[in-house]
Structure formats: C-alpha cells, structure tokens
Length: 416
Ligand SMILES: Cc1cc2nc3c(=O)[nH]c(=O)nc-3n(C[C@H](O)[C@H](O)[C@H](O)COP(=O)(O)OP(=O)(O)OC[C@H]3O[C@@H](n4cnc5c(N)ncnc54)[C@H](O)[C@@H]3O)c2cc1C
Image 1 (spheres, protein in one colour):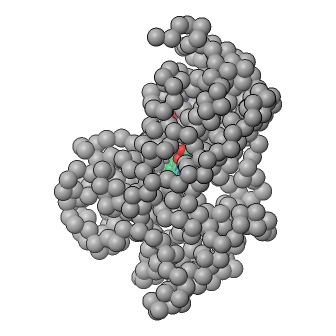
Image 2 (cartoon, rainbow, N blue to C red):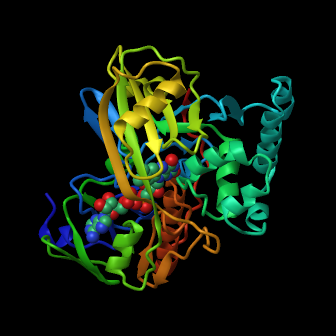
Image 3 (cartoon, rainbow, N blue to C red):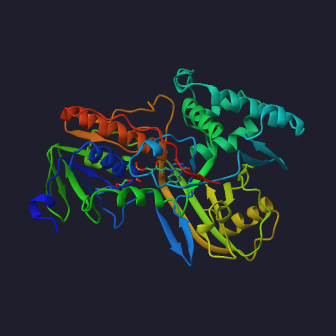
C-alpha cells in the first residue's frame, strides 16, 4: 500500500492512459524518473479498447497497424506485442472488378494482365524507397487534389481513404504519401487478442501503482495536477496525454482540430467465407462500406471455435444495418441474411484531421514543466501517438538535465 504523500507526488504526472500517456511513462521510468499516470476512464487504453461479447473480441475502433511502424519496437514495455498480419497488399473492388493494390512487383502485376495493377505496384515501390525527408519536401496540397491528376485515382482513392480514415481526402498530400509509403513497406496487421492488448501490455509493465484509473483531471499546472474527486497531485512537470479536445479544455491555448468520424460494425457468421486474407476495400462511392475483413481469420483468438468474425468500417455515421449487410453480401459473394450483428461502434471524433499546412511533428513542449503528447501532435495514428510520447519524454528529460537514452531499434515478433 502506498502512503498518502507518496501516492500524490511524482517527478512527472501524466494525464491520460491511452497509448501515448503509457508510452511516455515508460520512456521516463526507463530514465529513472518517478511517474504517476492519471486516467479518467475505468480502464487504461483510451481509444484502443476491445470488448468481449459471447466469446468474440470486438475492437471499438477496427483499426490496423503496420509491420513497418517503427515506434512499437522503440517503446519499452511492448516487447511481448505480437502482430497478426493480413495477406500482403489490399483488394480493391471497383467498377465491378477487383484489383490488388500493392504486394505484386510491377513485373508480376503486368503478367497478371492488369496495367493499372502494374502502375500501382510501380508507384508504391517508388514511394517505399523514398526517404521520409524527401517525401516531406514535396509540394503540399490535399490528397484529393493530388489524386485528381493521377490515372491511378480510382484504385488509390479507397486505399487512401481507409489508411487516412478520410473519405473526402482533405488530408495533406504529404501525410497521404507517408501513409502509402508505410503501406508499401510493410504488412497491415492487428495486435493479437484485440487492440486493447497493446495498451494492456504497456500498463502491466509499469511499476505497480503508476497508473491510477477512474481519476478525472480538472486542471493542470507545471507543479500541480488537480482532480475532480481524488485531490491534488504535486510534481516537477506535467504531461498532457489526452485526446486533442480534452487537451484544449485543460490548456485553453491549444487548438482544437477538426475530426474524422468512424463507425465499426462487427458481424458473426458460421458460414465459411471465400477470403484470401487481404483487407477488402470498397471503391464504389454509392455504398457506405470503406473496408471489411474476416478478422477471425487474421487473428483466431477473436472468435469462438466454428464461428467467424467479420469487421467492417464505415468512414462516417452508422448507415442502416440492412444496407451494410447487402453490400457485404456482394463483397463476400455470399448470403448475409443469417449473419448476427454483434456490435456497432461509432466514434464521432475518431482521429484528428491533418489538412495541408500542419506539421507532422508538432511541438510537444509548451514550456519548461508542461508538455503535450498524443496523436494530435504527430500523425493521427498509433505510430504517431507513440512517437509524440517519445518526443515529449525526451523534452522532459532534457529540461531535467538527464541524458536522453537512445531508443532501441528492435524488431517486433510477427505471427502470420
Ligand atoms: C475508429 C478509429 C479508427 C482508427 N484507426 C486507426 C488505424 O487504422 N491505424 C492507426 O494507427 N490508428 C488508428 N486510430 C487512431 C488511434 O487509435 C489513436 O491515434 C491512438 O489510440 C491515440 O492514442 P492517444 O494516447 O493519443 O489518445 P487516447 O487513446 O484518446 O487516450 C487519451 C486518454 O486520456 C484520457 N483522458 C481524457 N481527458 C482526461 C482527463 N480530464 N482526466 C484523465 N484522463 C483523461 C482518456 O480517457 C483516454 O484514455 C483510430 C482511431 C479510431 C477511434
């Protein structure tokens, strides 16, 4: 049991136990700094949440990571993370035909008989080889404007919309290029056991008593964090690791960005599905589905034996369930009448928008003693949230006069 003074003081108090707050805590603890993480919700994890329904593991956010993400391997505490991978590339359904984006070399794509497939293979291979600095130095406009002048627009549009969670493609073309580059360099993947596994590993590997859940923070200053019902916490520095809106409420000078809404729909079926393990993208703008996958085939821990879990993402508000079911029947070429709807999760402010003009490495140091991290300070991904955490922790350590350790570049275990 912690005594009261110890329980309410640390070198650094972090507000928010999403992946960014938990990762920042790890970087600081690894450097010998004492940390308390205060989380308003009942559980740590933030947006990376998974619920269990009838033996199914349902991610609230239906997201995918990428084996080319470098931050998970640089984050202490994630050594045990296992990624389950999709088949290489993605299948795009558009105009009554199906094209594979990525995975095929341009030469193999050509022998498959599709010139568009070969062009996409060549474009992705070029992007994969480009250093990030070269990419970020390109002229910037919206991804929509950049695609309008490309003959590959029809195929790349649904892929980019899915990667950016932005159906109108208002995102910066540089951010879009970064997302395509990551897609081309790695494989889409999900954490084994559900999205919540990742923050769960981080939380479990912190010293006991570090993460305090059910503690909502009301105000933040460099040396004092005040909570709604759990008193004050004193510190030498505070790190705000909430989402963008909560950060701006606690620190009114911060800008509130626009957000992209996302709906994730989970179905259960006993019917065997003809599916090759790739993410299926719907390129028909008349239908609401953005992408869908047989999640239990990627990660068998997500469904009970004999049943399949199909997870579908809509980039917007929830559409009528019958519309989704009828589109899924077309995409999977099977009747979906008997599929059981397990859950519909809508997140109105799923990810912050990243329009042209926004730095992908926004400052994390507000002033000496006050820092901000999260996906609104970097790219709006798990990779961005983790990188912003590493940057924020490094800024704290520099201000404390502690040498910043070099993060390891280990590789993550990947289970196909
Ligand atoms: C539907 C959806 C789909 C996504 N798809 C992808 C994808 O495909 N690939 C990808 O890489 N990323 C994806 N993301 C984004 C990814 O989930 C986020 O970037 C990442 O989880 C953000 O982590 P975070 O720690 O910055 O913020 P959060 O996870 O939001 O954590 C912030 C925490 O702060 C807590 N908090 C807030 N206010 C207070 C307060 N006053 N006091 C105490 N605690 C507080 C919150 O409860 C929360 O736990 C998706 C997100 C959503 C919602």
